[in-house]
Image (cartoon, rainbow, N blue to C red; front, side, top):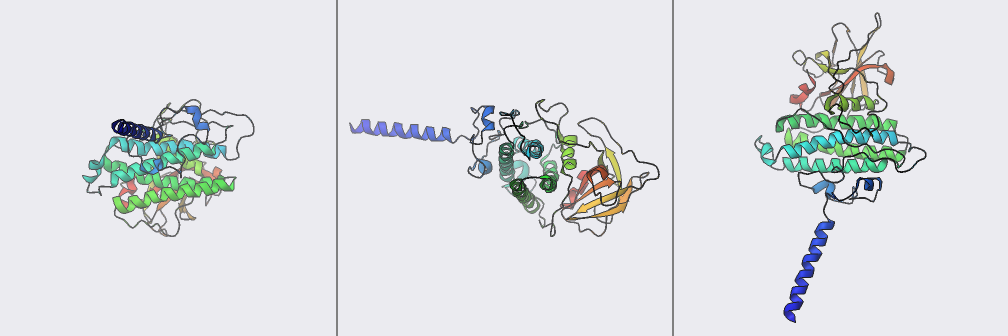
Length: 372
């Protein structure tokens, strides 16, 4: 009888352990995509460590379910639904960048570069954070609107070092477009959520500057604010999304879009830093397989407007040589964001005729990632 009791107790313990393990499975591949319309579906960001310490190479919830989620009700569209649809579409691009990094590399790929042995772990943690962002943005879109699904993405990196250099652009771009989306938001709760997400993206960039690049992570009293978020979001479409790969159910991205000419610069004649001359190049939009140029009007003045911190400085722009000068007044910290405009200061969305382009100032060795 004693032996039977012990065997029963051991069997029960094993079963309980199995149930616990199954209930804690973070991937949740058995969950139907319709579940994503329910905020109670899956681990909740801020209440589950899945979004911080999931270490497997496969995608965690909800990134393992990439299809769009259709509207489940009818009625008035949520006041910030379009904003969050744009943001969710952008987040799929950010998440997928880190997921590709997790899949492509391992710890040795980074320690061979002389980096700390925690580098791959941190990249995995950031991937997990971005998966949490996916869920937050899905939950922020009302049941009346489609929740966009993932496209296919190509980032152009083949080595761990190339991945790390591009990571800086990914993070600072996110920080910049969040400042613009906050200016579009109608609900105060949306503004609060965008600030909170921006703080997390800042943590990611601070880690990279300290651990990867060995730099002072501070970027002066304010990072760069830019009002026209959809112009930055269009860069993710033009540079990273594989043509024809987005689900047809997805809403247009970004919406609305001006489809402006995209900018690069001649890296052999400019440092990309304050005080340097700069010659712009109109680069190919990979998504549309075309290179657009502004339709400059004869006799009309055009300007380069450089945004840094919470201010901007306007400089003369020569439409024939496509050249200007980066303001020497700026410090070489954070990022400088530049557009070509037909009015000083680019005071309206419509005044911007090309760009934006991001000039990364930290790390300085990666500034030319925006160069042709």
